[in-house]
Length: 109
Image 1: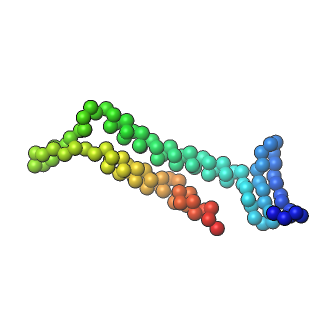
Image 2: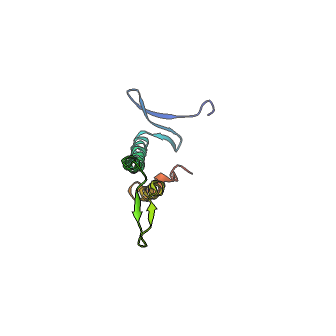
């Protein structure tokens, strides 16, 4: 910024709520609070299924096995289950929070 530039700042108590230069808004407190809440929701939805899958895996002393149709045994891979659950959680978040927030396309001008 150069000297003599007009900068508008909206303040309540010690909080800066808005800041703009000309027609460009640089800070909107309500929008920032909304995105902070969305970020918290995103983190909770992504980490909760991972926590559940990892907790279930700790209950087994040995790797669990499943019997196939031909009578053979196959080990259950918790890594694959965790990967699938993570992908499904991400897809669910796209519908709950929105694609624009997850990909941060609203911030790109």
